[in-house]
Amino acid sequence: MIFFRKKKVVVEETPKFVKSKAKKLRNSFKYAGNGILKAFKSELNMQVHLCMMMLVILCGIVFEISATEWQTCIVLFGVVIAAEIFNTAIETVVDLVMPNINEQAKLAKDLSAGAVLIIAISAAVVGLTIFIPKAIALFA
Image (cartoon, rainbow, N blue to C red; front, side, top):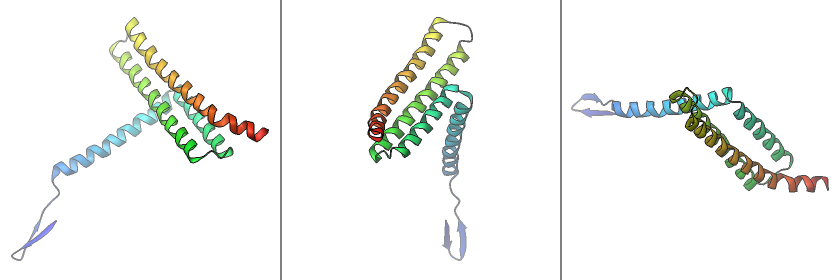
């Protein structure tokens, strides 16, 4: 901001803490994006989820699903992808702190994988309740 005092121009700079907060926020989005990209590139299950997501989007277009059905699908996409990322993070940390075979480490990894499976199956069931009636109506 610029203030004028007795024919003197005083330039007030943005405080450093404001700049650093903006930079921290920008960096946090950058790091989150990097994590998501790494998960999609390195995890086979993420690629499977991505393919299923594309199939659901294609079916949604073909069957002309309602706005509410689209919203349901989009929320489920996010839940499944987030669960898979949490699973990957848990497995990575377990491998880091417990490089040797350990029953508790195996249990932690199995539990997180099981949680993703439950979420993915639930999402698939919801998807089927959306698309099966439309497919039956289309071919009937």
